[in-house]
Length: 127
Image (cartoon, rainbow, N blue to C red; front, side, top):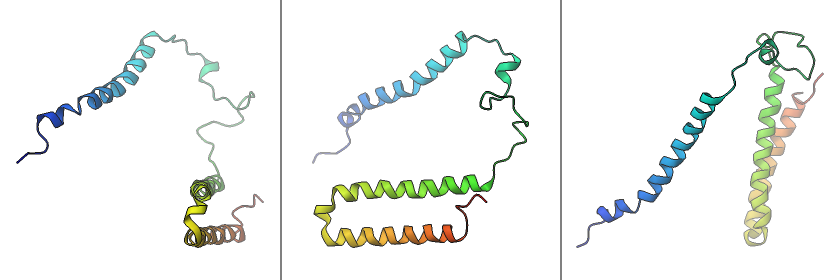
């Protein structure tokens, strides 16, 4: 009877471990070389916050973003994920037939309900 997982099974993972080690060591080595050879000349211009080429009107640490920005960002992510699901469905539409159509219609219906809810609550208006 042959036992699985002998020494030859471990040897087959050596190339993968080698590339994983390179993938871990190489970025660290690059960062160390950059830290050793960089030019260190901080001045007031380099340390000041950049705001569209003009002098900052407020302290960068005191400025708080409105919650609306985060809400819009979350809504963007939700509808971006929708497009991630729509593209493979559109590619495979001829093979999915009626079941795929009904499934995607339910998915889009739920998303449209969420969109209408957010719209009715006024989350998309900036006024």
